[in-house]
Image 1 (cartoon, rainbow over the protein chains, first blue to last red):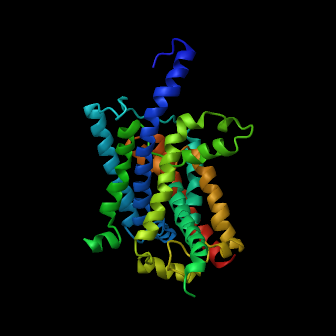
Image 2: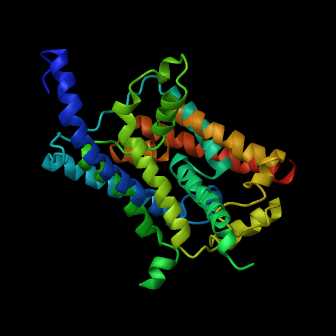
Length: 152
Length: 188
């Protein structure tokens, strides 16, 4: 992707790039579907499970988070070791996070933790729950639509 | 096998499955797994206003993640429909403790006393849903990540900032669990 002239780059972006990008979008959609399914079925979005975790009354959540981190860490180490490229041919690299004074991580993290315990959901599950809520709405909508044809 | 698909997934199945999304997204397009960036992308897409933090090309940096997020909604929808709806089998100790605090509905993924349209009109429901949700959105933006971006992606890549954030997550969570929630459930 050379940027010798802005126009040339724009043209490339307009035709070729969007096409491939749209192809990848489907991959992200499917991965998202899988993630939403896994989050829901593993019950990590349950307020009850979060309470159980913060009261240290079950190993379950710690086991899930711990084994998720270990799996991810081993995968990342392996990817780095063999210098794997992404499907699109890019070299895989994870940008490091900037520490700074660290205050944002401590303060932001603590505020997030308060919300996590109150709602019983972090953003991933929060969105998956909206999915479950939307499903209730959809059910009501479908009922209204089918109503004239249903025996009462 | 049917029992496996219908029952509760053991932690050693659920955890590694969640962890695999980190390499999957890296391989798919060199993307770093993290859900909360989508809150920012949504703000940028819907109501950027004059706020500097939201003035950027969200389609370029975040479209893939918003698409991933749409998938999460669909996946949550599918799971809620496919799995036989059952009460979350929490430990008897937690159940007893929460009953004692004033939670009596254990039938869903969250107690209806706090999370329902009706509860939203009560003070304790408002605190749990609206204040809690706000803190999730504010905290995660401030910390630059949530449980997926920091606790999973960040820790897996041995990032010190993520470790600090995760300590924060637990400090806040414990604070809310031991000092705020008993008050919210029992008094409000």
